[in-house]
Figure 1 (cartoon, rainbow, N blue to C red):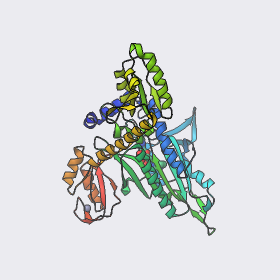
Figure 2 (tube, helix red, strand yellow):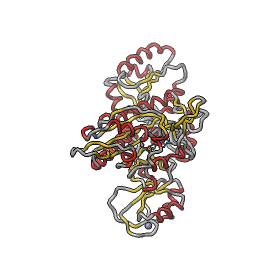
Figure 3 (spheres, protein in one colour):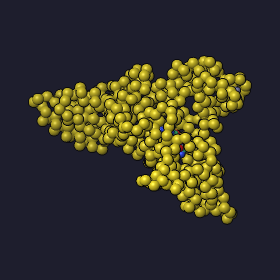
Figure 4 (spheres, protein in one colour):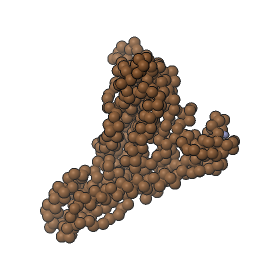
Length: 469
Ligand code: P5A
Ligand code: ZN
């Protein structure tokens, strides 16, 4: 049941990230939070998935410094304009004022590209695909929220690529979109993909492609972006290479990023009124085993639990042998979102069975101890599949079509999700939309002919609009 979630998402979310021990929000700096060990394990598994997808597509992990000299940071005019009110500055070393102020990276273009200039010599070295997973700092002025709008983004996976041709950079944008699709599909997080309107693209980019998911409150959250940078940064940082004709040419670039928001999306997509529900692929504990003890059978049950542990040792399992009532244990692991619970008591031993309870559906059934591992694996696969399908269906229910601005605004205002509609691409019509306190989220990649929702003029462009975080 997702009633609490739908009715008061903020309250549910803040409550659950604390009770499930994902984040401690009591740290005394606004927008900075502490990862609990359990949350950090979820993060570790999510990053494992992301890293393996990047590594498999030829990306190489590296690590660049946190501090960026103002002289580099200020070079790209559009970039600095986009970020200047969000940068934290280091102005002193001890008591001495610094000659050149140092920025805490809000993103790492201006740290990485001066090094690309040193590294890249010829077309043979490209494509160059680098990524890092770091913390970045943004002095956000909008309402901060755990994992969603952070001032210290603790999990910033940023990839930066260099190419010899415009076409190859285009191809890279496609590859990046595919990697992110794979990533969100693995986590069962549903998304839409749109191109951001020009006024909302990444500062310094030619264009930005964004992944959005829709939260239970109907608001869209941008969970990943892929930017085609063209030669903008290459010209600013003078990054050139020798082309096959022996001439110097500026490189073509892309960059793309995913943050802690993917974990917020994971929590929101799958959680329910009982707590978290974590997809088996990234669950710190895939299967929790609860011994059902009775006085005279405790030893026997423990012996059998040892055997079961051995049989399931290839999975991430945990035996909860705390001296408390089973009911309390069920409750605790439901909050933490462990996808499968196995219960084993004297009767199960006699029947050579174990009780299995799914976290996602609550479905409960006895399974035979024979081939227990493959049976558990099959249940986990079904859980993965069903969780993804349910979340996908919910997202689809939050996407509406409308040809009437008043109607669209009402759907969005009532928390119904996002609306797709025609737009003639005139800024004036976008402004009419934004007057309704809703945002043009992005342009869809769809071949259609329709009418602009504002001026009714014919257009081939369809947009998504809604409220966003
Ligand atoms: C791409 C990687 C960049 O910074 N430079 C390197 C490019 N793009 S971005 O769109 O500005 O950020 C990438 C993603 O980070 C998330 N994000 C945030 N998450 C949490 N708290 C924030 N304050 C925050 N700001 C951005 C978004 O998901 C964004 O798509
Ligand atoms: Zn119009």
